[in-house]
Image (cartoon, rainbow over all chains, first blue to last red; front, side):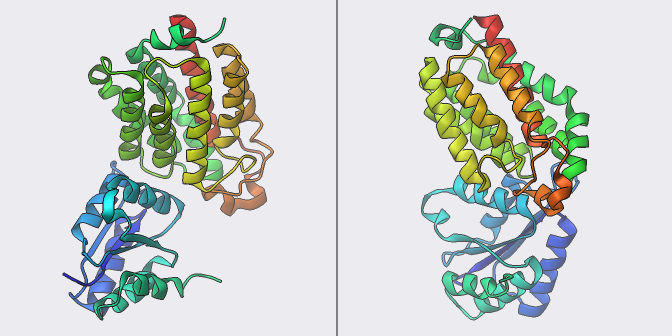
Length: 129
Length: 207
């Protein structure tokens, strides 16, 4: 797949999966897409290992845009990118955007073959000023 | 009594890991209660899960050099704690391990702590005075650098954790509460002080 991949990271697996469902329905199958959410005990939270696996599943040579919900999701995503390391880490970007709208807009942009930079910029336009 | 290279290289690593895991597990309910007051109420459970996972590796870690053990502890915490505490406490241990020589002097420890605390601050995009674990770690580093005994360093940590009570949270989930975060001890500051106390006790016994 040469289109940019999208990863959705929420504290809630239901929010993450539901967001992914919306992306699939609105954007289709043209974009590599993965989600993760919840802690190891089945409660709310985010995990570095699960984020690393989701990035693997959505991996594209064009890069991956990550959409997150609250603070811990961002910190854990930053840690996951650092642990992936190497040349791949520079092609994974966390978007500053609301998770649902950001995922749909980023995926829409990605489905047209846009670069990682363009995909991220589109998501960032949704960030509160 | 002071810490020196001899004391640090003689440290009983399984005892150290047990002491930290014990105190976190014993105080899990208290940490969760603190987090319910100003956060999302999972700090005690998350930290307990992380340090019990570290304890499970204790035998395998025992024969390895101190820096390797600290790095392994940090990685384990990152992968098992969940929540933002995983990367924050994980970064602390991983960075100390990265900076520390195999047979560290007190100056080495102070220098490694300083670098590790900077790494935690960068990871959390935070600084001193924002009602976080940093408000305990900075004074602890200063106390170690000043040559204080392990017991005195632990007292500094306890005092610093208590001193987060009147602060207003600016970082993390507690910042959503604004002024309502005032009047509660920060859970990350409290767990940092618990860890420092446990490490200090083991160091006193090894000296």
